[in-house]
Amino acid sequence: MSEVNLDFDREKRLGFGEAIYCAGKSHEQIEVILSQAVQHDGRFLLTRLAPEKFARLDGSARGSMDYDPVSQTGLYGAVNPITAPAQVAILTAGTSDVPVAREAQRTLAFYGVAAREINDIGVAGLWRLTEKLDVIRAYSIVIVVAGMDAALVSVVGGLVPSVVIAVPTSVGYGVATGGTAALHSSLASCAPGIVVVNIDNGYGAACAALRMIKLLNNANS
Image (cartoon, rainbow, N blue to C red; front, side):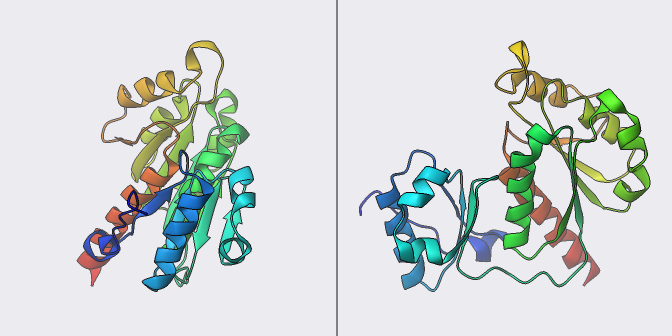
């Protein structure tokens, strides 16, 4: 199929491979991609794979995939074993942010990196965050997933010494719908040094964390 041209060397270059973004792809195109993975003894992380599209894949593809409908991610082929304690904390402001956070968690797991999820600690009930601060500070990388005004990003950025990666989400009413308010709030945060990825991009946040972990591991080796 001429519209498929896969990058099988990306993991060697970057430390993580090409992900298959399934939104906009037909189930036939996804099947062609997975068949090429088999031919190259490869493996793929699939993102934005809606349940109804997953259900239309052939039985062989479904049987070879660890699929999660919450994050709409599929782990196809061998997954790197997790051999070390969790290196990343993933925080969500609310339960509605969990699908994006889970995309980040499963991306990290695909590459053998454990992450601890700490959910529903938004600043509307600040005690939910403050009682977890000692736990959060133990992680060198913290991914903060938040919609609406994304206030959790600035608060965490001002309280922990970790690298903070903000993921604004499209959760919210009115002007918050679509995630633009959360994105602007994260970019304009008064907490210095926060890394911000695009709206709902849990995968991108995980890739940023993977780059940092690789550098840390190289520095310590």
